[in-house]
Length: 358
Image (tube, rainbow, N blue to C red):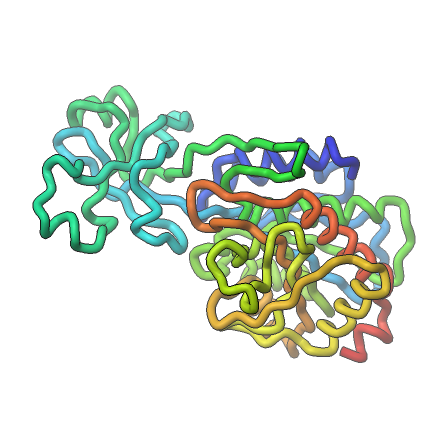
């Protein structure tokens, strides 16, 4: 995929509204670009599948995956003054939530702007100032003056999904991308790009991609998708948390502009060491910059795929994202490019015998 088109795809994916369970806009963008590449299908949990038209029977299946959902919120109740009580969807830290703009989907499907508000400092006691902030003390303010105005005029009801109100920006001088939902829309773009690189080419393996739903709330979509794909081996694209702004130098393992990250372990999965070595050797062979990490937390769809059937060798190809699970994130375009290039080289060197050796 040419750079200008790749940036256009990433922009549309980043800007699309799609908290867990409400990924419709993201799926629509992926269908728009995916129909040029291969055969599309969809299941009832909003997983989108992309199969190469060149796939043949009786070949090993290489499963590529990236999740479409983003962290956000849901309206739980409406107060008499018109403000919205909400719950988090996905992993948030309370201190990162207030004083940001959001969009709330109303009953007509229109996204209404709002602000996440907490008690103003002017009305806080000393005890209030010093206690930890709690999500239950925050509200979303859409400018309404009453319950009736919120429901009848703004047409917002309980159960409405809420997303950060952030627009994608690209700074070409440094090739940096700013926006929301790079976890894991940057992975979705990379997977689309990777599959597109094989158009019209013969391979000794079949490639099937799943753009899976609801990863941020317990890897739900992939649990359904794995039954459809039935892979022999898998590569999971992720927008992984960058650690280069708060970690000690010797602990930095997913820095911006240093290439994609291959994770040896997280709280849910120990990566297949043979497939991991294969991927790292290919990166070295083709001089593709890559980072390695060992994590004491976190988890990805790879853990679900890894445990499917008799066990599926799986690696996680992470594109570093600064400030994932907040309203605003930063990604390096070169990390995206290197992730795609590495995935392509890995797939090119896979065959039935190699996969069986893992």
